[in-house]
Length: 121
Length: 108
Image 1: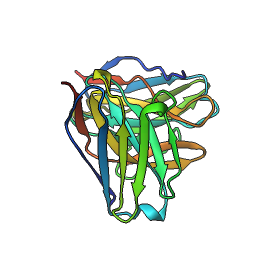
Image 2: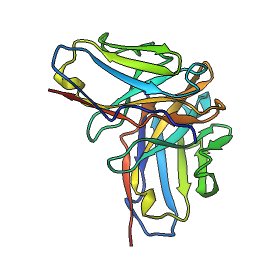
Image 3: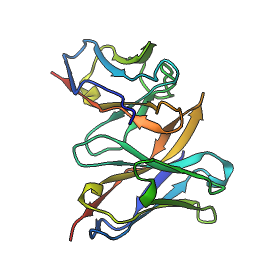
């Protein structure tokens, strides 16, 4: 059974960089699939942030691309998210997920439980 | 930017049928997926590729597609089906995943 677990600071100051890690168990990242990050502001909908392959190939939401970096560490079977220059609008529950692609459209079949990150001074 | 539009809310009595629509211009060309999200929990995939059901998802959940609209149908709604539901597909170029606006299903 694939399991994902997010970790990282729950509070980040405005203008600083948000950093989260997703540890994967039950599946080796090196075996394939893309891995992604999705966020959900309190009381609002879901927003895809970006995805990464085990080789390091990435693609990002165009609306966040200038501030996002996703990286992978296959030796630790985990991948990470960095979001720079955060504001209160970046306050959200951040989820990591496994990405599937059937018929050309990507979707998410396994999700972490999510972690709330609040941006506040 | 590309949008997938859902009704904000749907109310249904236990045992009745709930239908949740999702509209988007690119849906005739791309598959749609549906997620169920209960309060404080991560989303769970309930339908993939318009109408396929993952293992472990009850048969009362079904999906269909017609033109620019896809529909999630919950037949014989149960109290445990009360949740937010999100459709998901890709942007008009087929490159980036996009989520719908979400629908809150209330079981009366």
